[in-house]
Image (cartoon, rainbow, N blue to C red; front, side, top):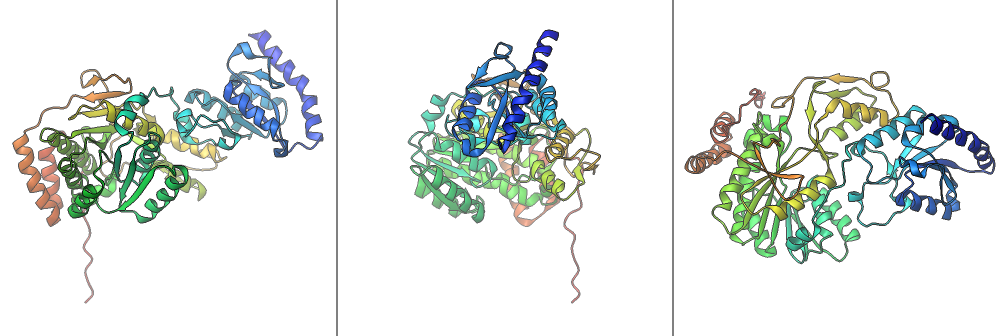
Length: 509
């Protein structure tokens, strides 16, 4: 090991004069490529081809020790990622390019920390599942994002199974302009469906998605549909015209504190909106119906989680009374989604702080948007009907750690340049979320990342009776009655607290 370090230091010393020569000849930017495999080699070749970019590659770094000292297109492998800090201290480098699409999060973090210690810019080649094709191009390079620190082993996806139920089919996605819905549209497009319809009540988001889909997938028929899942007539009209084969139901109210203050709206949208769409799916003989659920449905302490658990029960009930395969897919937080912590933290950092975290120990299960959607598509192939399928989210992450990473990515030091302020848990929030991925509560499937929840049976007569009463109470705006009935329906629902409701403002007249 000592001999290896001496060799690396000697290589750095010998290359220093070459570097100075390059700079003197007018190089605009000097880079190191991390990854001497196929991706790194292709990026290196493209840089060398496009001399007008003014990029000089000093060398490469790779953790395969058999490559040390060897050359890739005349660029030498200088060391491993463990040596990157020493290499950056040896001579000036403007940018580190991470060209390892399958690298785990631990390696990515090591590279970023070494680069940050010398204030060197870091760009990254996207993970394999982010690419729409297998092409490697320097145009794919982007800034490092906090999502890159969640990289896990590449997913094993049975594309044949997914294609079997999507290819040449008509697909309807509710909440289609949202974070999950829009990514589902992109991924479904790769399986050559006859039609993708995105159903959403957000005109602007739907417009942006339509432009993107028509540009990227011109051969796929994409239909933007404006409407609310609570509008029974509109939903029936859409199903009658499109006659979808597969429905991904992603539309929902999802903000935990907001739903604590608006429980009737959570019930009307998450429960009865789901019921309206599910009944239409049955009526028009949809083949598969996949409800997007949440880990907050596990032993819920908030209205949002309780309504999503009831939505799962609606889907399970429908499966017993329909030829349609109804199923639910439950997973945790998605990094970068609308309303998630990442956009909020970025905004707070841009404003100079503080970055607000509810509690230093609060942890959440996180997954990247493309990763979550890939597993949703796979779960749709696995489900036979009636299941609540759980996605393996890996290990939970402290929200505080994400805040610190984002602060460092922005070029600041947590606690010194940008303060992290702890503001306390909000109404309905847990310190820890649960997914119930243990052997007692789940059954394995043929995919190692997808499990079936073993949920307790519920009284069907009681369920249908209280559901009817709940619909009336939600229409009447009776918050307390709605909360009480949710507790009756979901025996594991134990509200953390009941926040003050809407405050009436007296009129001066």
